[in-house]
Image (tube, rainbow, N blue to C red; front, top):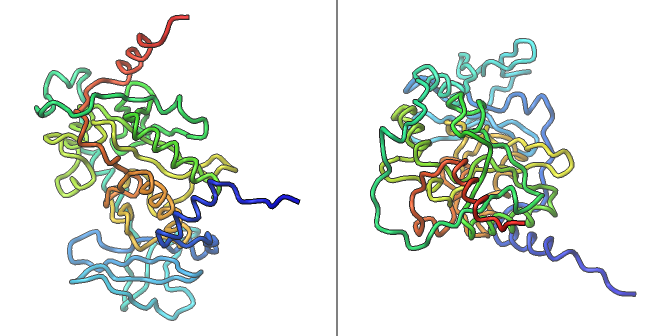
Length: 332
């Protein structure tokens, strides 16, 4: 009787995770009453107490973030150290007081949208990308939607579900330079043995959109957006925003933060969240890094391909890319 060997993709993925030090066993989801208490407390004003409550091995733990260095702290030994109103956890009882639960990402979005004015229909007439030397490699943007039926798409900037609150793209689309696109397909295949696929939020981004982001974002949050004076790696077609989706349900999995959240929860090394959320985040990172991508430290979902510097800053709209592809297609 012939011996049966595991699928090559599974062996490759196992070797990858072992080499990277990622735990092979997927952690179990925490009980609902534990998950409901995981989050950020305090920190809305400079110098105010700030705590991260997270789950590890099925138990709650906490660290205090204000002061000279973050440090682990003990949660009060009480029946419930948290303030609960109905089903909502609204505060943490600690050090003789109550620290309110906070959502810094939602606060930032509200701040940005409150100061926004919808851009003119032709913003290109008002500003131009920086002048650079000729690129080492000509652009060869590939439509990701034509490459792999296992890729899923949730292009937030083509709708209103984004931090700006209105569409930035005139149509749904996702493109990457060809080497980055092929690497993405390989990463998607490596995730299949674990029951996950890649869900794409963004790829190539016209320069005008980068400038809109920079102008709308408060200066103290500029770490989350690219400087248009230098152009972004999205502009060059070598950056991708993505997450994992469950192959069984087809839905995006829960990570340590929301996509495009402007808060410390978005950091690639954020210690909070649940064990399962951190495991998924780290799995995504290791698989992408194995294919030549590098995570952006402030955004777990953002990955840059290694040859990004070889390409020019792009200004073409999605409609222009689609029209160019249609003209290049062979006639039937």
